[in-house]
Length: 61
Length: 156
Image (cartoon, each protein chain N blue to C red):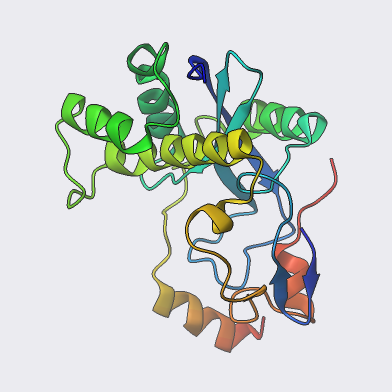
């Protein structure tokens, strides 16, 4: 999928026009199993949007 | 024409690490989660879908995996029929905002992908043709600056 000028070009090919890179899927699935699984809700989540806006305004990111 | 049959359903949870929360993201997480759904058929076509995870990826994955025995042996091009069948089994309507209702959308997407691949056509041509050839994403994907870099995936 290609982005250009803030737009996503229409994917070509049959169906939804997306093919999986199985190698990368395997890598990220392994990353989930090792690092994220079980810790997904260990932090308060989600931070309310307005608080995040305040933080951003204050810290400037 | 011999109808296609579903032979299996597979869901994979992936976490893509990012440098920081993306600009449009509510949570302050350093990763993005997704549940990928793959529906395989006897003709070798594999439909691809992505399910939303409103109450956690494990719940979504469990619901999708539990739907496998209902789908195996069915014709994947009967998308609406299969969706109604799943809705009846999980006691849902389209008005529910249940985790199950959201998770089934991933299967729906994968089934439509199979329909498109069986017809050898992009889905937008099946559903009436394209009215625009670029999807404007500028509101959600910042085109430059630190915020864009924050949301970008990190190479593992």
